[in-house]
Image (cartoon, rainbow, N blue to C red; front, side, top):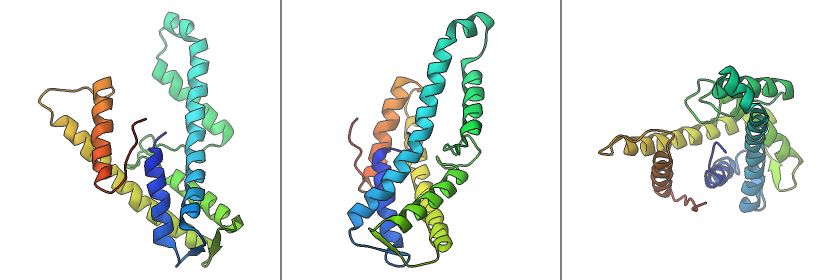
Length: 196
């Protein structure tokens, strides 16, 4: 998933803290944050499942691709783009669409619509503002929190770059170091990533 589950939990709690009671009232902030986190998790999982489906498809044609000298990455990108278009799924990764944040602006906007819709249906929330005002506030707050997450990610990457030897991005050592440094940066905010 693009965002660690712990960060999704933090993001959801912050949205409840920042927007309640001005935009909505909640009877139980923990339950409210859990409801928002569930929506975000589900939306981000859609693309994860699609990626798995593309990998499965490409596994079936691996011999053909090897024989015809077809690039795995290029085929992955083409098939994924076709499935995204067919299923009308909004691409989650911001970096794939030129956004600096992990989540694309389109995905943040899509999430805001789905969260507002869920809040209006839920008994846990009492919406106090116009739905579009609430949606715009959600976009603003999510963008702010995602930009903070991007700074954390960049700080973790910078720590890796300052190692005495060159560590290649994408390698196992890089991934392990990134996970460790990312967790350290999040811990400064009081967010603990469980080793999973």
